[in-house]
Amino acid sequence: MLQSTIAALEQLLEVQDLSVIEQTERLERERQEQVSLLLNSTGEGIYGVDRHGNCNFCNPAGLKILGFETDRDLIGKNMHSLIHHSLSDGMPVPDSECKIYKTLRSGEASHADDEVMWRADGSQFPSEYTSHPVHRDGELVGCVVSFLDITQRKLSEETLRQSEALYRGIFDNSNEAILLSCPSEDRFLDVNTRACSMLGFSRDELLSTPLSAIHPHDLPALEAFAASVFQLGSGWTNELTCVTKTGSHIPTEISASAIDISGKPCIVALIRDLTERINADHAMRELAVLEERNRLARELHDSIVQSLYTMTLFAEAGVRNADHGDTVKGTQYMERIGETSQQVLKEMRLLVFELRPLALEQEGIVGALSQRLDDVERRAGVEARLIFDEPISLPSRMEEELYRVAQEALNNSLKHAAATHLSIRIATNDGLVEINVEDDGVGFDTDLVNQSGGMGLRNIKERMERLGGSFTIISSISSPGEGTKLRVRAPISDPQTTGEPAHP
Image (tube, rainbow, N blue to C red; front, side):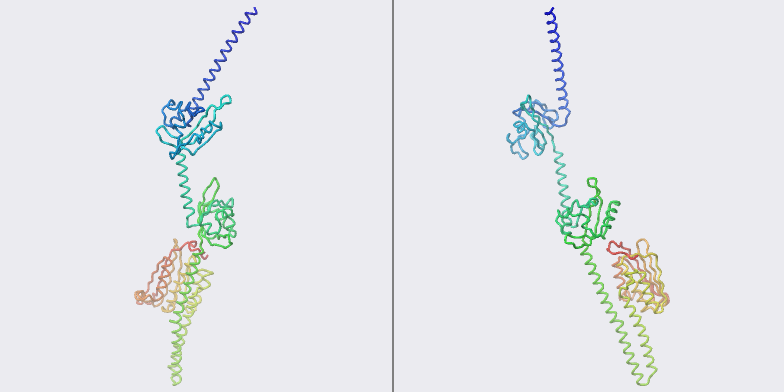
């Protein structure tokens, strides 16, 4: 009985042993199938080597990258000699310097992305690879190498490097100061050489200097400008002053655009130092003042001095006639003296208004012409009207030129036309300003005056050319009472382009 029981138990154990073996073999097959599926489906090249560097497998992706047909072309062969034997310049790579062999020696993983591998046809490609040690029962038996052809990545990196070099070359060599800033963080992200030179900082100093420290006196204007740039995408201003490292102030012209950097709203600004332009403008104004003074001096000599000399001659003649008892001629000379003195008085008033009146600075062209008509024409007995649109807003330089043109026309009318009525009409429309000056005087021969350049026409012509405008004069000595009509037209320039405000 005992013997039969033992025999039955032995048979049962044998069956169970067979079942465990079969199950183990099945699990091993499944594991191998999974590994094979993984190796066959990945796009990364993978191969394995033994302790001597000889290949024991290579997946399809690796064969394709290396240009081999089947793994039989690799199995049992030394992979270093086949695909990793030389650098990109052809210099051989000794076993002692190979990072894959290093893994076989040390048992530690290695990585490289600056080497090349060689294809079956002898061509090379930039590669990135990682070698992982393989241990069995605690013993290093080989390594597995995963690798990629990174040709496209290298091309992209080179393109990016070239693009960055081009950007940096343009950025650093620009004649304009360029500053990239993040207003919300009150700091600069990048600055070019011209910006550093203009503000007197080194690049590191400027990058560590708050944005607000460059515009300490214009912070509300700076905030408003930044808000406008973010809202509109771009903006322009010449109202912000930059403070240099030494504390000096620089008037600037700033053109800015909004850009997004890593999700942060930023501003790239081109900044131009206006100091030279402003100094040049001041020099031009001083030259214009000097020319105006010279012209006034000539007019004083040609007009007032000559009239006073004439009055002197009349007075001497009157005295001689009085001494000889000829009171009639003496009276006539006295009358001539009175007439001449009245003319001198008119011309003196005109010369006073040749200087820029305070009203032009304070009230603009309308106020200045209104004061002129009150102080000169109406005092001389001329009925004068000033007609204008509301409001008239012009750049101050433009007002200066147009005022001088109108003044020239008024002077001609008062000196030569013997007019009793005149009118000035000022209108703006479609970006143009138009001024019409009309009187009912005796008129003049426009052809003759145009040829001689007299009657102040040369001054009018030069001023209108500076404004980019035009003028016409209608007058005739053959049509008494129709007088003279001067019409001038000019485009209204943006006050910002001249850097000067317009009068309200």
